[in-house]
Image (cartoon, rainbow, N blue to C red; front, side, top):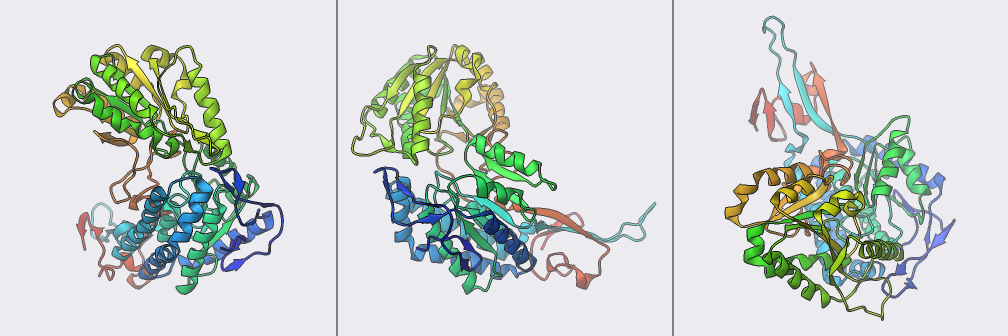
Length: 524
């Protein structure tokens, strides 16, 4: 594991402020010293990325695909070492990280297949009609092209899938954009191992130097410098609302404003409809013990439950209380996250309008940074009276909002802001009665779920991991799945160009055999 900053194919000399990774479960320093990059190094990374872009954007799609597959292969080759280090730096259990490593490599393979097929460029061709009246039509052809160098911020809660070689990096490289990663200080060793794998793959496939770089920083200076650099064309971020909005402000204040695609958290409301509660209260209680999974540090954790007063709801609360009481405390990702969770959850529990209905009683005193699961209850009227109850509590916390009737439940759901997910637990026969409610959920969230928990995000072609503000900064895009590539491209049209000068994707004889909209007909 090389712990130095990486620019292109060169590891930089050890200099400047150094820091160490911490084991959040034991509270001890881990092996390896990491050095915060300086402004000169941030500039060098971006300049090299811009130089690489001129070449990388034109590289054959099959060569790019082979590069992405090679990154996945290199990561799998050192998978044991990656998992071991990630466990030490995050406190997350091995099975969770093994699944995350598989997700990370599989999405690289997925983007490689997308590139090889080729139709993702959305080629559209309107051929000339010289004799059209009253005016002739010129030949116009359009496709997506890469934006330029991308800055990717690693996320604290997913040291692999939303980090150095995660979905943002995979999508950017697939689109033709070089990537500069600002490694998350909570898992620098894991980042170093993955960066080494990317470097190895890039060298093997003779990618232009600068197609990938990674810099460390234990503060905010380097992140700010990367966002403000004139060569940066796009920024991606997964984290807090405060962090995402700060990056967005920086990007807007540049001489050339650029897009920031930030996922900033969500409370993922769950609607428990009356008949489902009557028939399946105990089953639903077991399902929604998922707030405790990985110490509630998923961005899709069900943070709000909505239901109407009923005997079924009473059974649900009883089952939830019994299930959560037996759940062990869990290690949280960092001291800061644990401290913030403790403060916010304590404030909620101490609120006069709030009561505790379920709480974990099993604190592991042998480990540090422990989060204890808690579920509170509040009346719908009180919930609507104060916006603080709609703020995310990152960790194993959830709130049950109890309405007097379905009209009030629909009213309170209508007060929510944008979310990543919204879920409905319902019986088939009762759903038609509440269409106005389910329509509200489709306007509220990027993913609407029936009879399942929101945790777990399938990486594929149809998935949407995004949502209206403040869940993300742009609800038109997803940060997971093949459609996430659209964040890194823009449309360009070629008007009246000679055939031989057109990109292969737009040539009339379709040498790449991709799907195209040719004179209003989808054909190959």
